[in-house]
Image 1: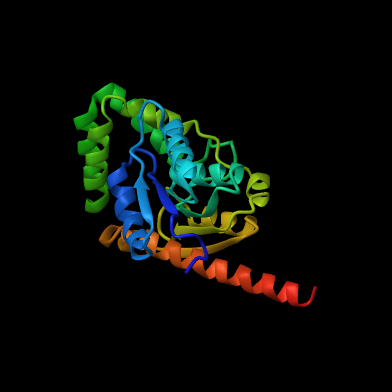
Image 2: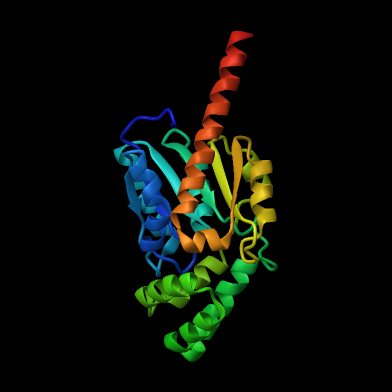
Length: 248
């Protein structure tokens, strides 16, 4: 188990266009198994990033935070943790989508921008119908729920996500918080190479892998895998520190 006080709050941040329900299903079971409080954030589609950081700030005012996020939520969690090192005990970065501010080739950013355009042109239900026809059933069901919940402001939320500046390599390299990176080996929108790059660049990081089929069968695999990786990382860091002190 992570050596942290019992009052830790897990703040779970959804990905682009997603909602608190999916974030809770992803991270809630692992948090409950450890007796930790969970706050799955419902994004404000008119100010997604601000709603995420406000939730993190509010949780930090009550006690230590474990910041857990998916895709866009992972990037926000990591950025907030880097700015509040004394408030955070760790980060679970699930399905990171990109590195760096230049996102012209970022699949997630391109998808968000195109979907926003289609929503404005064709309306919500027409775009949902196309999405459902081309998506796995679990993803189609999750996005149908969240998109309807964020309508009519969903295009604005997607625009904000498309314009988001992902962390640069130097930002990753300077982050001292323990980070469990969870990548999907078969997700073209969140390339596993990005998860590998994050894990290689972050000073205190461990990489875990899942598949989209596993995630679709049980979203909790994301949290279970992330928590296990973070705990293993924490044990490793503790052992290294003990060895260093013994030879100091």
